[in-house]
Image: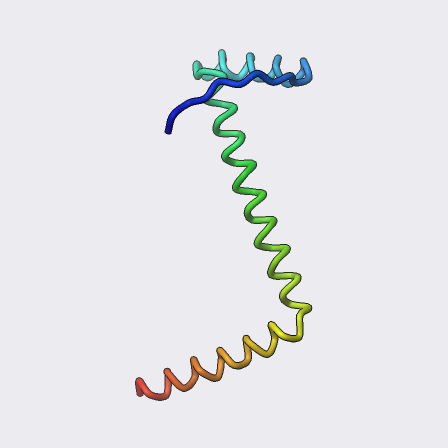
Length: 81
């Protein structure tokens, strides 16, 4: 994917840690930031899924659709036997 440059301000303690770990592991700082952002976005996606499932669990309409889907699934299993 094409890289895009941007400027951002961060607390100095984070930048010091970034510099320490970049030197310690001999990797570019942007690589650490890229991995950290990907990890953070994955966690956000997981949190979104969790929230939507919890919300659906309290929705009576979703319970009905799940029950209908289970009935259809059981019919398919019976046909396969």
